[in-house]
Length: 212
Image (cartoon, rainbow, N blue to C red):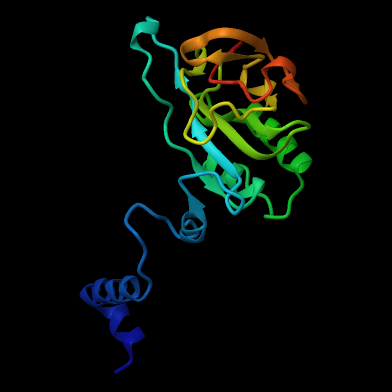
């Protein structure tokens, strides 16, 4: 039987053929084609194999008494480019071997042209001085254009580890206040557009507030 000719004359067969095709190419619920490999190459913890993480920042509420106890869990990837693609929901999609400079330039361009409520990367935190990975990409809807963003406590694996930091000004965030203790306590440092060394706060950040 010629499947093609029958399908052209029968809507039922078209439906059946579609079901057969779907069964031949299974994918997890919630995944779209092309996302499976990235999802399989991700981890919930930072490590030597998955050194580039992504965590969404929290929007500031009217009262700091309402701040949550912990930041959301991270999702970590093999490469800087993969983490960025995940963080921007695919808007910034570069080869896995793209340099940090190429990725950061693309992130800045994307932030400036993003739709009003789009998820953007507002900052990157680094475990080592000189913007050396492991890295943590911080995302937020609309950046700081709709208000301050924060971590009242650091994501899993990132407390007391930050040694340098970068802020993407195209997102409306121009200040990143790093605090020695959780809930914005203790000594603090505003990294501005970025610092390649946290100085006295090296490996001491326990909460962060990003503002316009």
